[in-house]
Amino acid sequence: MTPLDILHDALDSRAEIKELVEKLHPSEIADSLESLPQQLRDKLWQSVKQAKVLPHLSDGVRGELMQEMLPSQITAAVASMETDDAVDVLQDLPDELVEKVLQTLEMQDYRRLRQVLFYPENSAGGLMNTDVLTVSTRMTLKMVLRYLRRFRQLPEKTDVLMVVDKNNCYRGVLSITDLLINSPTLLVKTVMSTNLEAISAHLSAHDVAILFEQRDLLSAPVIDKQGILVGRITIDDVVDVIRTEADHNLMGSAGLDEDNDMFAPILNTTHDRALWLGVNLGTAFLASYVIGLFEATLEQMVALAILMPVVASMGGIAGSQTLTIVIRGMALDQITNTNILWLLKKELAVGLLNGVIWSIVLAIITILWFSNITLGLIIGSALLINLCFAAFAGVLIPIFLKYLSIDPALAAGVTLTTITDIIGFGTLLGLATIFLTAF
Image (cartoon, rainbow, N blue to C red; front, top):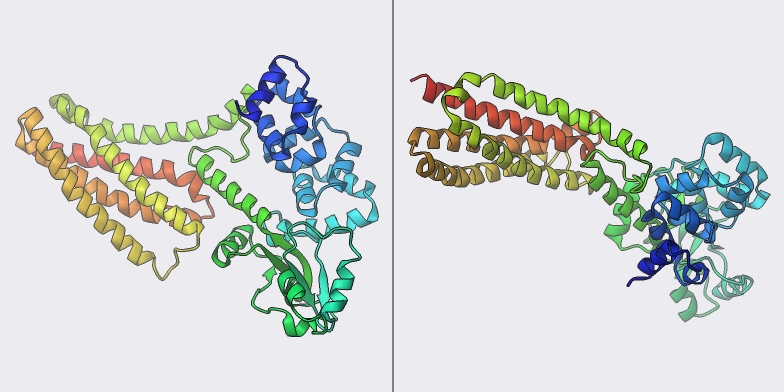
C-alpha cells in the first residue's frame, strides 16, 4: 500500500493519524486532501500544518478550505510562506479579505508581498520570489564570501548571485561555482557571466515556461521596465506553470476547469457540467437537423443509416489528430503567420492520402456487405471529402478561436465535432439523394 492509501485507511477507521501525517511531504498531504470526500477531508485538514500544505493544493480545494479559516490564521500562514506561494494563496481570496490580511502583516512581510501582488497572476512578476541575493560589480570575491557568511542560510535553490550596479540595475550573474574556484582578489565584474538575460516582470507565465525549457534554466532574474532587478524565478515555479497548463488543456477539452474539485458538492459539480452539456446538445441538434433534411432518402435505403456513423466518426478522429497538433504548436509558440500556410498544406495532403486509402477500404467493405457498387462509391467519396475537410477545419478552427480571444483548448473540440458531423452526414446523404434516389 502507498502512504496515501494507509492515510486514507487510518481516516476511515478513525485511527491516530498524526504520526502518519508527519511522515508525509506537504505535497503528498495535499494530494490526499484532494482525493478525499468532504467529511474525511475536513478531518484531515484539522490534523495537518496548514501553512505548509496550502501552497500545494489546487485553487478550487484551497479556496474551499480557506473559507473555514479565521483571518488571523490566514495571516499567520501567509507570513510563513515563500513570497510566490503566499501570493498564490492571497489571489484566491476576496479583495476585501486580502486587504485585511495585508494590513495585519508585519511591515517586512507586507512590503515583499505587496511588490509581487502588483503584477498579474499569470506573469513573471506574479511568479517571482523577492528573496534575491545581490552583489555589486565593484565587489571582490572575498567581499562576497564575507557578505554571504552573514546569513544563517541562503534562500532555497540559490545557484547564482545576481549582479547589479549602483542603481540596482541587473548586469549579470555570479555562479556559486565561479565564486568558490576563482581567486578571492578578483572583482565580480571580471568573473560574472552576462549570458543570462533577465526576464521582464510583465512577460506571461506561459512564455516564462518556454524560456526555461529552451535554455535549460534553473533560475532567472526578473526586472521591471527600467531594468531594475525586482526578483527571481526558480524552476519549481515553472514546473507549477507547466502542470497548470497541462491540466487546463486536458480538462478544457471536456469543458471543465483545471481547478475542478473531484469531490465537490453534487449540486456544484452538476452546475459546472450542465453548461457544456447544453452546448453539446445544441450542436447535436444541428447534426440531427442535417439528417432530417434527407428523411426521404433514409426511408428508401436503411443502409445509409447504418453507414452514417462511420463517416462521421472517421472525420472526427482525423480532425482531432490535426487539432491536437495545432493546439500543441500554438501552446509552444511554434505556429506563426509565416508557417501556418505550410502546415495547412501539409495537413490537407495527409487528409487527402488517408482519405484515398480508407475510402477505398470502406467502399470495398460496403460493396461486399450490401452488394451495391453505387453505394460503395458514394460512401467512399463522402469519407474522402470529410477527411479532407476535417484536416482543413483542424488547422483553422483553433487559430480562428484564438483570434476571437476564445480558448482553443476549451471550444475547439466541440466545434470540430459539429463541423465534421455536419459535413459527413450532409455529404453522404446528399450524394445518396443524387445518385441513389434520383435515378
